[in-house]
Image (cartoon, rainbow, N blue to C red):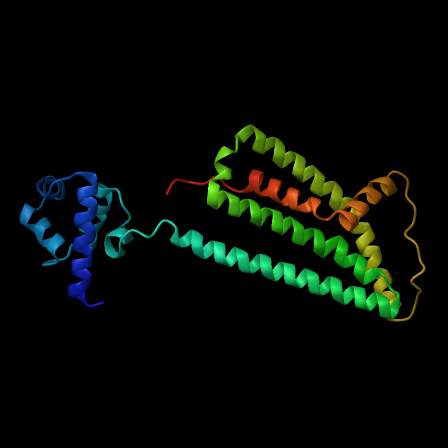
Length: 240
């Protein structure tokens, strides 16, 4: 863009924001300690304000300096870009999860080793479901503004509840996942068989069994947990 075109663009923006604020050229000129003709020259592109004047205009017109230079960005432009990126990320996550499930199912039919399939269904699938739930809730917020109904007291309670659930879930599953990894390595190197069973530990076994059944048989529950997590952890939206 040439300096002449740039100057005209800046002038157009100054005029637009001045009129939106309901300020006359005389009033703006007085606040800038210049003549009305100088302001007129800015707006018609005959002359350009220097950086110091642009900063003063930014304050007087209550706009960003970049808005004076390039115009106010479209309100939905960043949201549309973010929505596309989010959709691509969700799609990639789903594709990876499906392919891993198919691969480990085929591997089980060939080797009769259930460990890889267990690991995918106990780690990747719940993570994917959580991500899907959070993404779906963010999409709803963009479209109908569900995030605006959040209340601080519910957010605090929700955060504590989800943190406790996540901590208990992790504490229950990490030992089993690590055990699966050890067995997987042993089986791959031919130092053990797949008939080994996870050691029984009172109390822990009941907690572990609950989350094991949840993650393996009902992974869709993590969609709701992801949605709830986005509601209570995502920052509140600011006005455009």
